[in-house]
Every structure is written in C-alpha cells, then in structure tokens.
Image 1 (cartoon, rainbow, N blue to C red):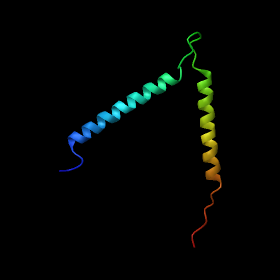
Image 2 (cartoon, helix red, strand yellow):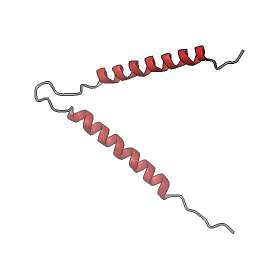
Image 3 (cartoon, rainbow, N blue to C red):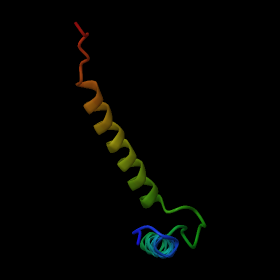
Image 4 (cartoon, rainbow, N blue to C red):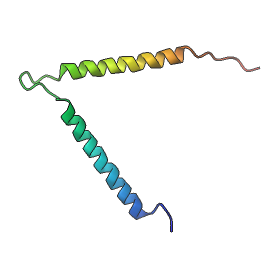
Length: 73
C-alpha cells in the first residue's frame, strides 16, 4: 500500500484549500480594507505595509552588501 494515493492526495488538496480560505478570511477581517466615509484605502495599513517592505529591503541589502567573493585559485 503506497502512502501517496489519489484518496490521500484529494484529502490533502481539500484541507489545503480550506486552510487557505480560512486564512484569507481571517486576514480580511483583521484589517479594514476601505474607510467607509471616504471610500479610500486604509492609510495606516498602507503605511505599515510600506514600512515592512522597506525594512525587508534594507535587511536584504545589508546582508548582500557584506559578502565578498574571492577568486578561485
């Protein structure tokens, strides 16, 4: 009997799909998408996302900048 068969693959796919749906719904409920009065995107969420992206880019750049490549031989 094999571990990976069609039944197990189908069950795994269903659990994965349901988990993605639940995670998306939780994320959608956690942050309001639009201000109800002005119908504009949530500025605090946009600012937080921009800061997180800038921080990630800075960490990546600093780590990549410190490496040196030595010639072979």
